[in-house]
Image (cartoon, rainbow, N blue to C red):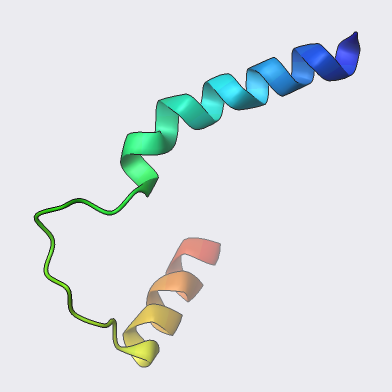
Length: 46
């Protein structure tokens, strides 16, 4: 029963943040610079 409740909570959270973590259709189709990406990930990891 506990696992089912946890699964429902996880599903609810993922549903709420889905619009934040998906690519938007109006964004340019440019490949990210690997160095910029590494720097941004480092900043987020702090």
